Length: 353
Image 1 (tube, rainbow, N blue to C red):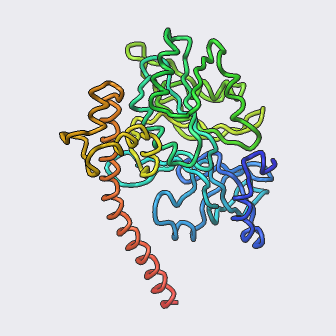
Image 2 (image 1 turned 45 degrees about the horizontal axis):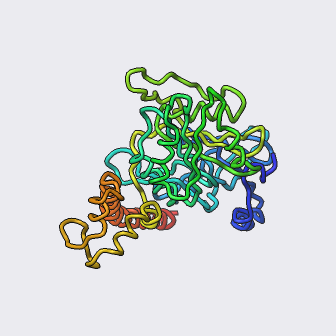
Image 3 (image 1 turned 90 degrees about the horizontal axis):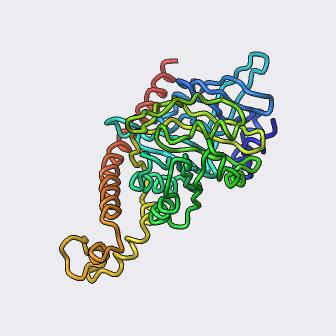
């Protein structure tokens, strides 16, 4: 397997030079399962795990490899196994706060060129949820594309596209149907050789159906959505990166019930540029857009040129980021403490010898 087919580029090549001089090889993580990784290398695929030193030096969950990552390896080709010694820098990553009460980053997809934000044109269609996905996609460093599936079930496709255009400024939008085989040819341009596309969306949105279509075979199990509300079951239970027969790679992901922000300060302005441009027109520079006179934001809501739901979504995301920033400050302090604890323990262990 040639590296350029797997997405190798000059950015990664520069980062790998020092390791290559030491005799290591490199591979891309195609599947992760409980800290075991299926990695594709120049010699084929192998099962890999991180070294003891790697595990010792890793402070947080995001320090470990994720699907799409490039890792530095020592291979045991006769066994079909390898040891991971280092992680090459990521040129993009789609992250969210891990589900639950802990403040921890979960990397959903790494080293991705394009993110397909998938929503179906039935009960799954939700512009407010799409706003959240867009913020996180812009923050990831990948290019977002909105893919509206199950277009054969929608009676007003232009109306739905107009709703998406109102929240996804300048983002390509494609309405497709695998069942009716319409609109799919427009997606081919994103899958050039070595380019990686991640599919993100809720359960039942049609990600696995689209993956199977792109692969030309039934790789992913598909289950029917519930008839009462069109909500999907979790068909895909893990992230996996596939090579397409026509070139390019596709990363299918499980449906996400929770999509909490991780970092998105700059992306908020990108996704909500209409609101931020209005805010600059407010009479008071520190306008809170509540009861202040001559507030351009509230004026636009009253005139109907700004949707009140969109503004509330903007406020909610801002509050979420502020809360996360406070939590992350405490987390950073604990991580620093843990790092020095490990260093101290290593020094003590060395003295005993």
